[in-house]
Length: 217
Ligand code: AP5
Ligand code: MG
Image 1 (cartoon, rainbow, N blue to C red):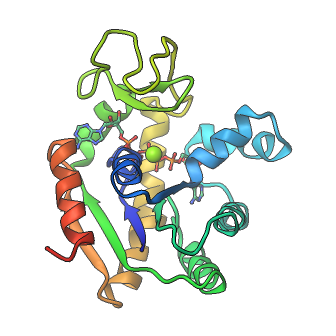
Image 2 (tube, rainbow, N blue to C red; image 1 turned 90 degrees about the vertical axis):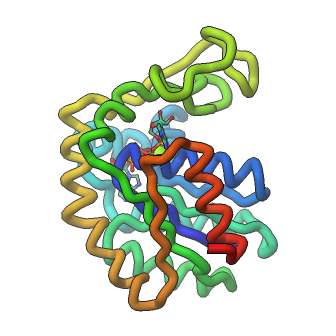
């Protein structure tokens, strides 16, 4: 199964993709995570995209589609995928169609996480993650069970994203409205879009997504 999680910054794409990965053995394909890994590893690609990411603007379609194509090539045909933060523009949606076809895959569901934009700034500015394993947390909504200790790997160091400040978040939201929301009709025309209330509790959102994937909703 191949699915897209679509929603503005902070909608919960990464949170839900990680849960689906753990629950169903699907593979999360986050272009944001891939680009951040390129930066951390100090690669030429990382240097090329750093300023764009920090401004909240979108990286070029060619770069992100190449990342997705390369990553899919490493997966076996049986592994399901969750596209998180890709596609984000009409050209990326067209590239994804071609890439999936080339890899003998097809798109099963596009799940739109419907959220109240005003709440997203609080979600994003409170977000942090484990510096070692990347597990996600939030100052208010999802603290580690034991203070300053990662639930997953027990590490004590955490980090915050450089683009998680209010000004950049506003730019990221404007980019979403202008370039990403307009791709929804492409998938609506194919009858594969489902809408989930992204303002519900994290666990409830997962239950709603799982129901769609299992054909119960
Ligand atoms: P990317 O990393 O994809 O960021 P984004 O789309 O802005 O989305 P976020 O990761 O901020 O939000 P999310 O929906 O994953 O929310 P999360 O689950 O973390 O992209 C970053 C940048 O890279 C872009 O700006 C661009 O420059 C570049 N880029 C990436 N892909 C690109 C592409 N395809 N094309 C071009 N450029 C690209 O949740 C947020 C917080 O809320 C967390 O703390 C979480 O714990 C909490 N939370 C989640 N769900 C809930 C809930 N239901 N209730 C309460 N709290 C919740
Ligand atoms: Mg994310």
